[in-house]
Length: 206
Image 1 (cartoon, rainbow, N blue to C red):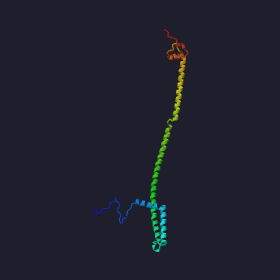
Image 2: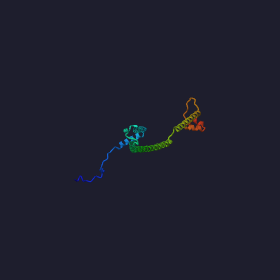
Image 3: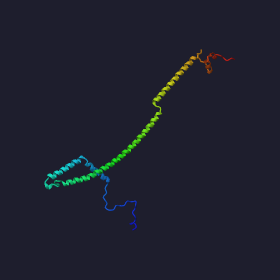
Image 4: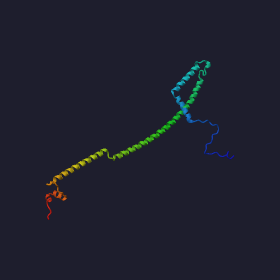
């Protein structure tokens, strides 16, 4: 008895009372409505509908009176066309709503991709700017060529100076009879430069 009178749970929705309507799959119904709207929006539908209405008019006008199922004023045809229009309009609107939902999702995805591409482009722009600034401090190929050429010229000039210095030293040293040179020290070079060549032949007194 207590179980039958227990309070309803607030964490669960209340079951609807009365007549339960049949349930259907909205996705399947939407696809079906899109198929109908897509078929009604083609030239084939207009051609087939024109043929049917023409045959309807011809049969109910030219056929014998006892075989006509919808005589002149064509009331039944008017009812059929009205029913078709009354159902076609909601189906077309439903198909348009589904297409609008897909377009909105597509636009959101395109906006997200555009935002990502913009961020990537800005990142690449900053990276290129940083590389350009870094490349400004790095020696380029032309700079290395000019520095190597200048270094080669300096080495050639040093070599030429060394050759001139050796030639001058060879011209200042007189050759001896036996073809051997006497070793000299720094003092002999200084005296020779001061104009005292006799200092080389002076012997120390005993």
